[in-house]
Length: 193
Image (cartoon, rainbow, N blue to C red):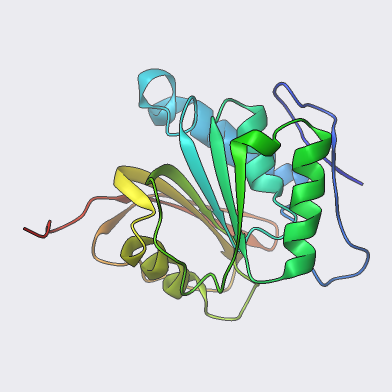
């Protein structure tokens, strides 16, 4: 059983499906990502997480989004086209008492609907080796999901490459086993008049 690692919901279960239909982010990788997001250049006033809105794109079980809620995010939008994944995420949100702080969007993550409010942190965790990360990033931009200065965490297979949009700057990149984590910052190059 997958569990939330730290924060107010530490040790609570995250609903999962048997088999390999959904690949949740491992506990080790989640812990590493949140250590980066909560310390160093992202600590204190610079936190993209504490008291902020988050979007979990290609959410699967929602492990990253629930970890964010547990560690201080105020709201998470979970986006996935798989209805089973969204049902699992809703069950978890209900069981940990976070349903009022979540929204669930059934959508192709490469063509998301317009956001109502932009987020300061995004998790982009597409299926490995399908070449969908860049399309997901573009989708977040065009859908208005990212506020100026938002931090984006992309999870891919270690051997995959990532060419981020010109409006995103590479801040950090690390590998954990078979996983590559890329951290980007969104700074729009031009605002429309």
